[in-house]
Amino acid sequence: MNTVIKPVENEIPSPSAAPPPAVADDDPLLNDLVDELFFSLTRSDQRRKGMDYLRGLLSTPGRKSVRNMAAALGGAGTGQSLHHFVCSSTWEWSPVRRALARYTMRESPPQAWVVRPLVIPKVGRHSVGVSRYFSADLGQVVNAQRAVGVWLASDHLSVPVEWRLHLPGRWRGSLDCGTPTPAMAQSETLVGCAAEASLAMIESWGLPPRPVILDLDDTDPLPAFRRLCAAGLRPAARIRPELPLRVTDPALIGHRGRTLPAELVMRAGQELRRPVPDPADPARRARLVAAVRVTRPSTAPSATGTAPEEELLLVGIGRGGRPWPQELWLIRPPESHAGPAALWASGLVDRVERSFARFGDPVGMRDYAGRSFNGWHRHITLASVAHTFRALSPAAEARARPTTVPAAT
Image (cartoon, rainbow, N blue to C red; front, side, top):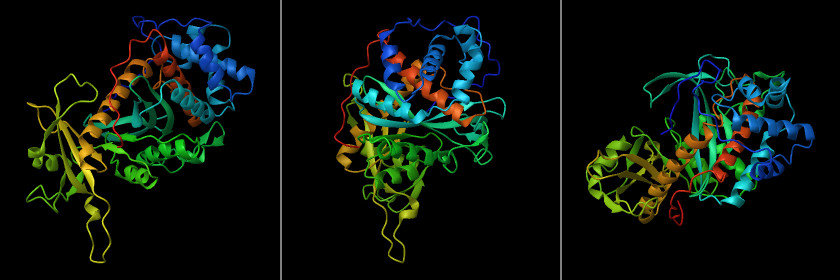
């Protein structure tokens, strides 16, 4: 599951913070990214400010606030220029993200789209989208922003290319620098953000579809799962142990027709476990995998003859000698494919998690602190470009061993 960091109250970088790797003025990779991704910024001053903001994200130690970046870049009026560029300028972020997606697909064709939340704890209540909610991972109520990112994930590169910021009720329709927030921010739930962000990449951007892996933490992924299935996609979803499911598998004698938390269903099916090689690391010991046929509790046939939804496969993953199960996934049939597909999806989620920790956090994806909805989207778009630069930089270490891509998910 996703790591939640502590909120930061002070924008001054720690004196002990290690400086980021230097970026040369004539770095060919950075110039190539800027030329291609900022093509939609028709004004030369916007492209210049975009490059300044990227350099601030890449070169500033500690938090990437406008004040800290301006201090690192130097020059009179730099802070005001950077602030205007993300909060008040007229450039649109969606064309930049679409260009980033196409650049990534050319450099490292993705095996899947990984959809995961980004939780950004905050001290106050003034940053756009901040609200209080209960975090099951922390076991307490936290004050935070919540967003959903879609990552193009492969063995060699994991890059976030699309984002949705979840706006609780008090934020919807609020003014953003004198104008209403866009329609896309008005009514999406967190799980709705996950579905809409994925579908928009196909319907609006024209990207060729890939398997969609949902890793939504505390949120029930089934509404998004069904939306994606209805659109002809084949999603896989990691779920929490307490999600209720109705057992339809005849192999679970005495449990068929019962509704139980997913963890109890899988414990009942532990005799079905079989060793399956880990596609992320075939040299390691095989992992134990079991698959049980289930549906949602509301999908039982009714007296009016309403047909149930299609069966899904609940897949448990674990290792010998450890509590069972360690992970739970929902996968569409066939059953013979479920184990390898769940292991493959789990490996890509872990790869994205590591990529975010190594590149995303250091370039300030969580560091925007303003009230502007547009400003948040522009900041995280530029942080995604900075993440891509770091991930593609020759200074990055050799990529992890490749995984085997299943025929479908």
